[in-house]
Amino acid sequence: MRRFVLGLSMLFPAAAMPAAAPFIAAPVPAGSIPVQLCPTEAVASGSPHLVTFGLPLPRGSLTSAQLASVRVLKGANEIAAFVEQMTPWRHRSNAAIDGASVRVARIQIEYAFAGSACESVSVSWGGAARTQNRPSLLPPRTAWHVVGSGTFVAADAVREPDVYAVLPKEWLAKGVLKGVQDLPFDASITSTRDDPATMDATEHWPGWSEADHALKNNFFSGINEDPGVQAANQCPYKTDYEPWLYDRSATMYALYFRGGSLKALREAVRASDFYAGHIDANGWFSLKGEDTKYVYPENLAYTAWLTGDATQLSHLPAMLAAHDTFPDVWVTNPDRFWTERHAAFKLLANSIAWELDGGIARRDKVNAEIAELVRHQDGANGQIPQPAGFVDGGLYHLGTQHDYDWDETSYGASSWMSVLLVDAALRAYATAEDLPTANLVRRLGNFLRVATVDTLEHSYDTYEDTLALPRYAMLIDGSDGQRNYEDIEHALDVAAGLAWAGYFADLTGQPDARLRQRATDLYFSYDIGVNYWIRPLGPQSGLTAYRVAPWRKWGWEQRVSVGFGWAMGAAGDSIFANGFD
Image (tube, rainbow, N blue to C red; front, side, top):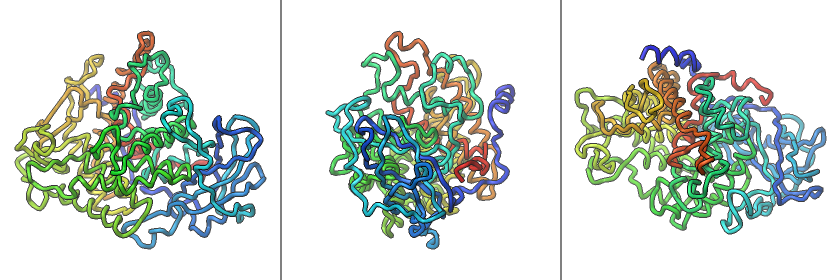
């Protein structure tokens, strides 16, 4: 074990943050960013075409009135634009912040392309007032078309914008849309699929970039652009619900937020439109039916904010009603179903709804859910016992309530399902910055730390040493609830939960170096696993080179891991010292 830890210290950045950096990115009251306008096959060159997109702005950058300073420029020439606030920054606990500044500005222009290639414009704000204005907003979907090739065909009835606006990854990494700051991909990580032979031959990439390569490469497997793969071995995303678990579309957006590529953005928008087209009148995902694990407003919000088109958000009321079928309050009734996963997706949905629409009822809904999670973590008013060896932090419940995944009369909790709660709590924290939510995440991290064990009993038979493994379920006294070789496939997501717990431990003045150290241990397990799942010669037999099994694994690993590197303290505030400030 000692050799293992020494190896980690040489491979990865120091897992320590001397002082917690601000959770919310600093305001940028004046600035300019390049925006790539990329035409699709629906655009004829030489003719003006309607383009609509969203400009995310860090909190406190501009008020609604100051949007008059937003200008779109081609070189030194201003392009006539319609600009309005699409979504303000909301805050559940500080009235002075709530609604005071613009979170997403919607911009609409007309633009004529010289050819079929992307062309660059700049968007500036905080300086001289805009002089060229469009009189009103036209419906953005009038400049969308039915997708006819690639990942979808006309029969799928998926629509996409005629023109995509691609924002810089450094700007997206400020976390305005996701709610957490992140590290953009290093310049060495391109937007194209990496050579599997090269990736397989490289045991470790520096820093946290192994996960970045895998986020991108497994994306290509998931959209069936892994060359030579037979149809039977491709991802069945049009007919099977399984690839959509953990929000396939939002995971594609996570790739876009990190890498800033047109490919990721285009596939995210397409997937989101397919997903929205399969939400029925009662808010359920029709490929699955009545199951709140598949009800995700998150990707719909990203589509609206990035394209300026809010059509898909009409599904939101029904989706929230679907989530309301899951109970708000945990009770000891052994027959009442409850999991961290269902509670997490409900909190995430209501947090997204509050961000989009505001309102007292939606604010109070999020407040009540956070309060209930804290009450549960505190022992549910004495309903949950504290036996010898009690481990603080888990949201413990009976095995019968969790589909009998552990002894039916014992109290336990799931490691990787708890990470889904961390992700939802992060979203909620961004609109309240409150101590109860910070401590909720910090204490969940203590549970995750103890739930992680060092073992030889893992799935990676090509690695003969011990690896850190997050047990699927741990009982309240720290003993096994359910432990499997395959639990190691949750190393990255649990590492992310621990990284954020470490951040909030620092932020609340309760530093605990064990949290980020355990995150580092788990990241090493994940790093080993990336190579385990690469088979460069797979396509010769009709198989993927970058294996993703099951297909939902890409989502469970990567959607909740946005912000991992930032939370580990690899850069802190210095990451934003770039030309976009």
